[in-house]
Amino acid sequence: MEAWIWIPITFLAAFMQAARTAGQKHLTKDFSAVGASYVRFLWGLPFALGYLYFLTQSGGHSLPDTLSNASWRYFVFSALTGLSQIAATILLVYLFSLRNFAIGSTYARTEALLTAIVGAFVFHEALAGAGWLAVAMGALGVVIINLARTGVAGETFVRRLFQPAAGVGLLSGLGFAGASLFLRQASLSLGLDDWLYAAALTLAMVLVIQTVIMSAYILLRARDQIAAMVPNWKGCLFVGITSVIGSAGWFTAMTIERAAYVKALGQVELLFTLALSVLYFKERSTPKELAGMAMVAGSIIVLLLFG
Image (cartoon, rainbow, N blue to C red; front, side, top):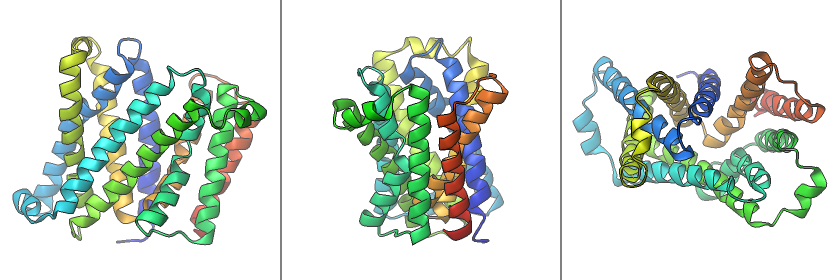
């Protein structure tokens, strides 16, 4: 396996995540935030299972044998991945009900930095000096862009550092960071040489867990979201496909490389999102956004050249 293969895979994952996010935003006119998130799991699951079936057949694997030989770590970390991602998403949605949600969302954007810190101290995935520099630069760039887009001034941000929204945002970022680290541990615990298959199996397992949990909630509390899928099936299909391609990319990249490096490089997603807003929606970037973009781009260069 080439040491650099995780790089183009991460770029693909980041681009697909940006596309999926745009698709979910389009769905919010007919879906609640929870419903739009549910579409991602429900409509993505069949494609994830199809992808797993293809790799199982083409690679000569036996799915029952693989699962029967899997250690308890695989199932525990897969469950933790699904639960962490759901919890982080709920917290992110909850931020919008808080007065200072912009502050919280800025904290949530520090996900890559939190992944590096937790990964180093909990899973002993230490980074090189240049790796820490790249992660820090990227996090700062993302914070600058987020502050620029939400209209929060720097002094206002400092005054509100310890308000409830900040805590919720930090927990959301920790949830996403935990999901990244847990999925890597789940894939590695399988002990397979075929990293594509290990990542696909973990993706399918996590999506099954998430779909079951979200389906139970939707059936009990928001059945109208299911009916809304019928007239919006094209949008749901788009979200499902882009979600699985993106998730397969993230899972594969994090099976190959440390989650902190993948997340740091994955911040290129924000550049893709801003580029789409400029090219497709004809929006103009502010000087602060451009400064943040330059910081993120610089962090990626440092990561690729010296990390």
